[in-house]
Length: 435
Image (tube, rainbow, N blue to C red; front, side, top):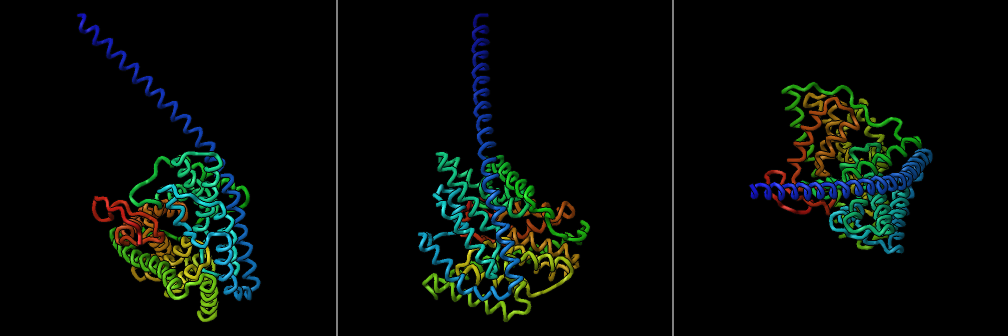
């Protein structure tokens, strides 16, 4: 009897210890939650405000260029000015979005000057008519601002990494109007096969903060694109989508290789960045005059996307947009690759999809999501993006297109610092950089 009484007492003591430990963990979790609500809120508002100013600036200079087409003659001058300014600021070796990835994964420090430089350089690129996007620049803008805030707040290395992801999410969301996509993209793009789930709540809060601020200031009144009527889910539509997804994988690989090749060829044949920028600007200028309706391929490509989703089919548009973007970014102009990538996918989808029997606009939407997925290696982000851009109709086919493109796009990627942690073909760890 004494034995059982002693055993019962020991069990009670263990239960009390477990309860105390659980209460302690819950208290720590609650404090961490409150900390990230505060930090993510600050980042969301601060970065969101700058992203809104960035969006307004891009829109203003784009409208100015449309009103005064001769501004494209500034391309050689702007191409030379951007690397010159980066050099005098001590940022001639800036690695763009790749630096954001290493900052999250390896805690590599980010200079605050990255933010104003990428802001001004991207605005200048759009003023002159270079083919570049905005969202990739927004990732650098938000990440560098958040990293600076983390250092000022004296956060430890791990928390600073999360704050950088919050900044990336907030700026992407405020600029593009897709808050869930922005949060997931910040967690998924760094290391393929590994999601930084600890950053889920902070990234989502920062993303929503940036989005709501942008919305309240008049942005994103009309979010998304009109993809028309989605194809009905049948065995035939699945086969058609599967084939289109496989072809999107090839297009995404070609697009990534073109972006990297543009940089390599520019550095190989013109070693001086200022001269390379001037020559590259002259090449883009020549292309704008040589190519029919060349102005369609300047800027990010949003106008071309809406035109293609409407009714037009320009079968060679995906090739020309790839060429324009590769020359622009390879010359040293600043901007992003995400919207140009979506534009390339839309152009390819609206050409190839109807040949497979898919509806015109829906095929363009599938092409956008499929090529984006293959180029970024972010399948979860891509599926959510399809929902936020086109609505829930056809989401199963969008998912199928993403899955096929992701699997067949190999280990190519827009960002050379992105790590493929797990194989796309087998359940094994490979841990290699995207090429």
